[in-house]
Image (cartoon, rainbow, N blue to C red; front, side, top):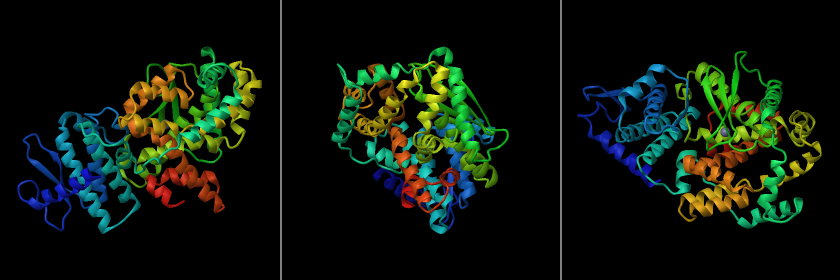
Length: 449
Ligand SMILES: [Zn+2]
């Protein structure tokens, strides 16, 4: 946080120096956002949120030149992306831009508070922090998640995770480590390679059917599905714009039958694909909020992105609906023994109690209190995974760092938000849709519960 405070102070000092870099006066909101070929600074009026939003998009695109994961999706003007590539601005310049932009958006929000402006300010603060990180700044895990995602995970008591492990031990008794027994059981429910396509077609189709029963999505919406290898993630949605997604599923390891509905809902309906459609349709096209033409991955948007994608599984398949569908439809397609479905459901309920262990391990590892080897061993123990899968999990943390909290903290926040609306008598799907269409950060979502 000190860095940000320092940045704001430094920014105000720059604003006060006047003359040589900008035409700023105390009552105007102006920042340097672009440099011409002759290094002549160009000042852009940043008093309006529309202009601030445009500068934010260009900042994100420019930052994406240094960090390939910075921009997860972009469906704004192609010339802006070309311009960012051609200009190839330095990280130091981008850090200055982000600092100036943060001052401008904070000032605009002070003059006229709005939901749009509040989110844009948090998005800008996150962009600045990520640019600093790409430039070598090292934040503590908690500072990183606060700056990027507007939330800090709680401290965890490992005894609670150990209690869940003991229950899993009783569910799958036998010799050897619990993780090996769980891995062996789950691997007995792997989808045969030649059945992957048909199982995923059925699962995504069912997720889509359940979502369309509640939402009127654009007639042209569609997705394509690809199976890929050698990735640090198990599935990914690459939103293409114009209501289209590319969904990739990683086949490095056997895909267990319960992952089909998980990925179908998470990546597709009512998860990432649906969320992206809502953003593009209602925020970008209807309201003209250009900042939603870009999705900066390391930003407060990711709490809602991952939280809604994970909660979407529960929304589309509440209670025992998921295991019933898997047992009655997907097990037969995959040629698996439906008698194992009940144990799988009970195991997954218990594994859910371990989900937050990943946040603890990531924090200990990234803050330097756990070696990489120990992080792998702890991941094997608490995520009940083989060494190979645990290595992939730690590789994800190496790549995306504190992003891991969005899956669990995000899920809890979204669930709490929908539950609060349902407690007021509102339909959960309607409450969920409101959340998908409203730019809220983690602290905003928490505040309404
Ligand atoms: Zn996701």
